[in-house]
Length: 356
Image (cartoon, rainbow, N blue to C red; front, side, top):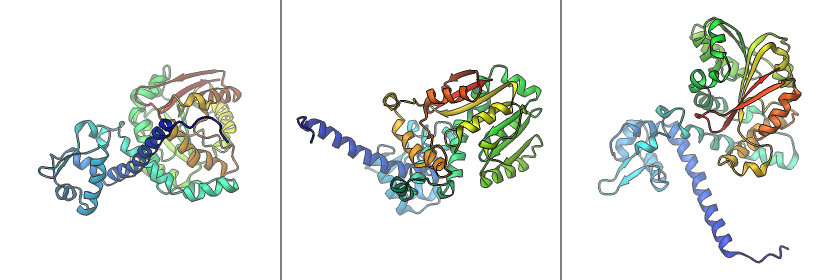
């Protein structure tokens, strides 16, 4: 038994913290609902309004809207005037909660809480028996991931991310071969294909659903310089076929990330560049205490990134593999030059530029 004296003030402070955590967890669910129902987008353009007026504008049921507004008011998200029972979304809050606020719409990110909560029973079974939870267990995964990618990658791709690559924009304009590994629904690659018609783009992903969405979107856009293929990233057969390879938030949840990185190195031409976006963390948990988003990131890792890798008999690297491990694995894969960049629009990720 611990012989240290009991500190009541420490216990009280921790209790207060737990209550705040419970409230914030509940609020995260309601913020997700506000995003999915479009309530935040509706309220952004409304003057102070009653719950009935808000519900009517949103095309929703007033009783549910009123209860949701109760959480928003008590959670400090929405202002309430008791004199006329009106609700108002402050402009300062709308700037972080609406689709018009992209890439700063944190309400979209709140969707991960219910998505991850849906697999809690399966995760607990993994704690007891081992193994992992497959992608197929995650309802709405592709929809939420597509929104997340749209904010962190697509919205900043042309103006902020690609300019990180020395002469990258110039080469893309002239025409090069580009591969996106773990392309998902293809939003980033399609954006590049539209912006740089002289370049040729290929997307690989093991998800039939994601590739299906990507192919359909590219066809609707009438793009002839892009192709998508269902492929295992750990079994790349391309050799010196690409001038630029990208991987956006895709390496850490691979079953065999070392094999993926080695395959990417082989697929690059001698002067090629590998651009890897991945979670900004340290490989040392004590240093991650300085990261204000670390609890959220470790939760996503445990309930998604790590476990989907383990479900395929993978390494279970996890989202918080950290910059140090990432740089070491890139070097082991054959990249002799690695530069790590951080961009103003993205507090969650590092951007690794790797050359052979």
